[in-house]
Length: 204
Image (cartoon, rainbow, N blue to C red; front, side, top):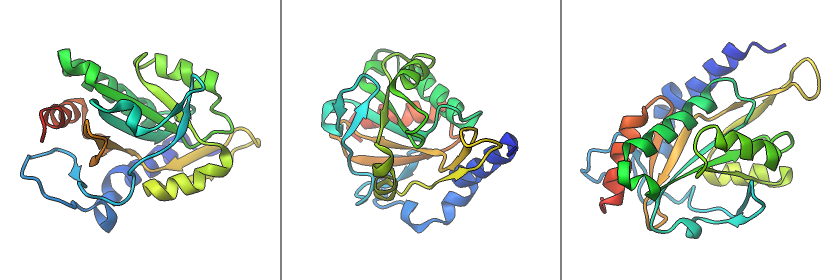
């Protein structure tokens, strides 16, 4: 059986240490705003999606105009990285106070074969009932991952259904106009995320 702690270490490397070496996550448009996340304003990737949410409704970024959007790619059986990231997203929403309603959290499954709508709805409720889980059809996931420059890999387990997933651990942040603006590494923290979102909501 694959050691979950080993998987977590690999995900952390993808989300934190290794990310600085990837040229496509370099800042695209230095804004002078002092963001905690990596400024990727003007990027030609991670610009949109059309995915079904856990309620069966088709969603696009246009549905959330007027809100800051944070998108995280993961899977519900992830033992550490995914729940930590979603918890920080929920904490950031609380830290925003009255502006919390202007943050939309989205969780995109990289394990659509096991992450059913029912499972994902329950998973989102554990963090914040306003958050939505989105899922691609299994055949659509490779193209989606390429558009968002997300790494994922099936790691076999003791049985065909006990596999785990290595994956990029980080979040994309969009401004209220639906433009991708920031990439937050795993572990940046709820306060840093809330501060950056507050700047975007103010028009930064």
